[in-house]
Length: 533
Image (tube, rainbow, N blue to C red):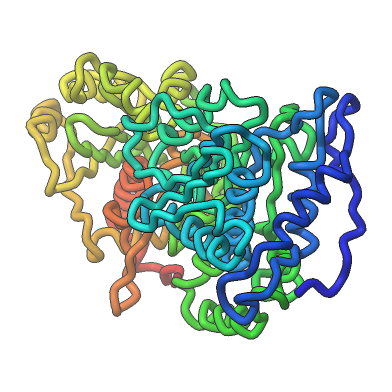
């Protein structure tokens, strides 16, 4: 299978006190070489490691501390699909079970669900069946997803996804597959924090393709891997490997494909990548899927909207004091009583050279703050301490408190209109109207949302909007998913967006009112064309 021999050089992450043991590394490589491939045109042929696979194996198993034990306890392998990571993971699991010399070895396979975890197990079970020396000393329990090694009284077991049943495990080896689909960090923490303390050299082998959720445990590991790779994080027990293309690189370039896919030409037919690329070119909705699965790029969702580099270019400096007395228009997304509430002021330009200026405010219930941090893996607590989010007393949003806050805002800023979602109105809307505010109902469908949403994009692209770099608003914008109707109209789709978008919705509503009143109430949309997305 391999066309060229690896010219091995020890990993740069090896400590000065550690050493590379060629004999130990050779033993593991030879063990894997006795296994057979189980799928495709290589099925039944010896598992001859590709250079990138052999590098990983020699680094992990051959880098030893002065006491002869492995330096690395955690290996994080991030690589595009179809590069052979499942077969490599299966081979590692079998070595930990049969070849590592660990008495009563406990090797576990886990994933977001048992079906996903079974993929690596099924490959491992087939490898055992195709290797007589292993088959005669083992028993495969297919229904229970368990392989027993009679020689050392050890086993390889697939786990269910229920976290509550995982405490008390004595893990000697772990294969955690597709880490990016883990719903939270609970399973990872249970299986890696203290579970292997009784073992001399446990190994946590984490494999995944890039994901979409930048608030996940996988993205946390991804960031740690990047930090170790560039030298900003020092963790000698953590071994990082990331194969992928930079987000700025041309995703249609075959040379970029080769960089991201070390098995291209071996386990991956380049013609299939070309076909997938051509399809993504013709259907923009497939582009992010291609980037994520074929190039291992972290993308937010299946259809991108706001280019965040363009958004960040509009950061600018916003001085609330200098805006006092100026007319402005507000968008208010009340959301639900227990969720994030957004209120965004939009200040229209005073002359042709001035941009639109954005001043956002956010609230969450105080009693739910810690729960949200744990549940959503979003730094609400940090933002609250920094003043970017305010809390209201209790476990639901106190609309009366927000009403008083808006009244105080109006003492400093000339709030001409407040746009709100007509389908999520509350008593607060009537109260604000009684307080003298002009309340404008604003639908969330294509008719009302399309024009200002397109205008927002135009202003960002032309750098005619300044938002001050507010982190909560930025997070909201990065979460936006848009839906398009057959006529080309667009709207923010709350259901499809991966995270909160309340601030983005409020911004669009406030911008709509600001633009429609820019020329004395005559809509600006009537005087020039819209940007077409």
